[in-house]
Length: 125
Image 1 (cartoon, one colour):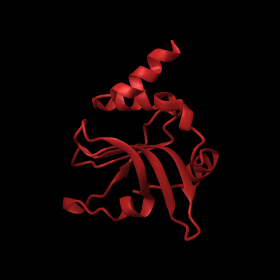
Image 2 (image 1 turned 45 degrees about the vertical axis):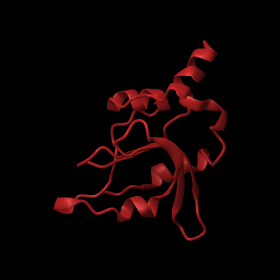
Image 3 (image 1 turned 120 degrees about the horizontal axis):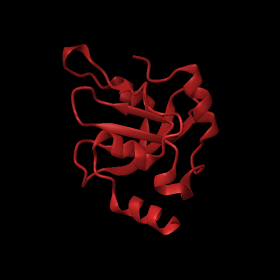
């Protein structure tokens, strides 16, 4: 599966680093990548194309432990290089709703939403 397509490249251009910094759990998830054989999931909220053509991605990453999940950076090439058993690779969620925010995306996977994201949401109400 292609992890990046032209349509997604255009979306990435609209969300450079820092563009959703103040939104917390309301940040729009622009791509979701996941391990089809395990629990690793990357919710991408910002991205920038590098001079070498690779993409540096920023978002919330959960590698299967809700308590250790965190925001951080990953290169698209790193995700593409992951080789799984049976010839599988990391996949892009083709069914992610277009205007899904981070809290909604995390809840849809059954993962625990971090308290600090929920606190941000409660303050806005």
